[in-house]
Amino acid sequence: MSTPSTFEEWMAKADAYVKKIEADDDDETLEPEKAIELATQAADAYAQAHALKADDAHCLYQWGRALFTLAEFVDVEEEGAEEKLQRIDEAIEKLEQAEKLCPDNADMLYHLGQALSIKGSTLIDELDDTETGAPLLQRTIELYERAYPLREQQVAAGAVDASGDAYTQSHLVDMISAIVESLTSLACLETEEAKANAKFEEAFARIERALPLVADRRAELLQEWAAALQVQANYLQDQQMTLNNSLFDPAVAKLEESIAADGTRTEAIVELAELYLSMANGVMAQAAMGDDDEEDEDEEDEEKVRAMIDARIAASEADIVSYYEKAVAQFERALKVDPENASLHLCLADAVFARSQWALPSSKDKESELVAQAEKGYRTALSLEKERDESAIQLRLAQALYFLKREDECLAVMEQWKKNEEYMLALYEADDILEREFLNFILEREDGDEDDDDEYEDAE
Image 1 (cartoon, rainbow, N blue to C red):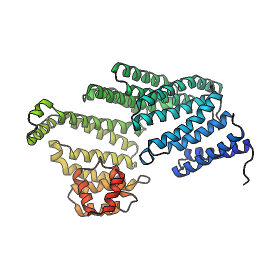
Image 2 (image 1 turned 180 degrees about the vertical axis):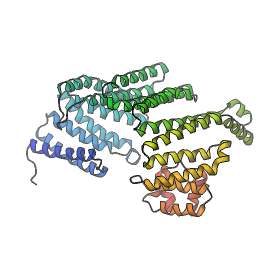
Image 3 (image 1 turned 135 degrees about the vertical axis):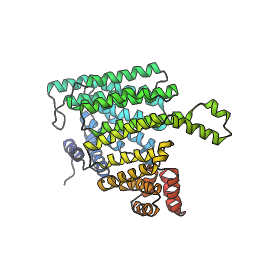
Image 4 (image 1 turned 90 degrees about the horizontal axis):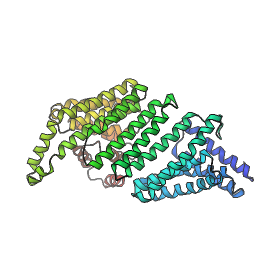
């Protein structure tokens, strides 16, 4: 194939790479490595086109989008926040140049907002740079606000995008969701509850505004509303320095509303189950904290302090178990919708195993029964697994077998686990699921293998 020589030829070549990304992404067949390769080729081709026609807004816009795609694939844990920010800045530079040339283009405003949102979130979450990140989030809202009426006009006029697809009400919903995300992030940065709650309320009002736009997305939007309510509840707990499950009641109600709107969406059902588990853990944490003054008096008597904590947890057992049973009921509800879903079986098994290890009298009484139930769930998940890395399930199954005192079977499963590539990484990623006793057992079984120890430390 001959090398392009004109602006139009370079644009056509670049656009072909982008269309390939979009087509494979729609078919869910696009591997990250291939996406990076195609986005790199597209960016290079747009750069060649730009060299021939520097004032073409569409070229700059598409170039910025290709660079943004590359930025999205930067793994902060592996490559660092600075690398991600550098890639995002490259995209923002092109998108801002395009926006200056076409200040009334909804697509350009929207995608510039997306890039600024990611930059702001990265600065805040990874570098704790609120001073720089917060204004970027505020600017994203302003860009979305400018884009929204322009998008409304496109929808009303039956306009189509560069791919020939019509703009619909769903595009308006996407923009509202983007505004809600930025508002929620900004609310969490407020030091005053009143100001934070005002932003949360504004976010909720936006979602309510979106609800009538697309009937098929009502359940999704209600779940989004529930997620924002959970963020608000966590914020209020942090501000008030207390654990108060009643703050999560609005989120529970909104998730139930979402499920009622579409009972086939397991995402909302699982989110409700996980929220109930979080509330159970909250009650335990609150009981464990107890009265600081009372414990300070006996801080030298560790056994007495431990006994007081255990007594408080036991006194709260009815509430803890109630939340747990509600969580299990939701996981079972999800499995009725999708009984062949390995992840759902895994989630339920994790919940049951966690229950077996809680510091509750009933957990001690039913430990073997609960662990056996978890084992069954892990085996079912393993038999259904088609896409997920099996090592994560094998590790959990091995732990269940260990606590059932079936060491030979446990070791056999661990041998299968060790055949997976980067199996020690799976150990690190499951660290919050594994009991310290079992984790020590694994590391001891490695018999001082320095390579494995080093691999685990690298993962950490």
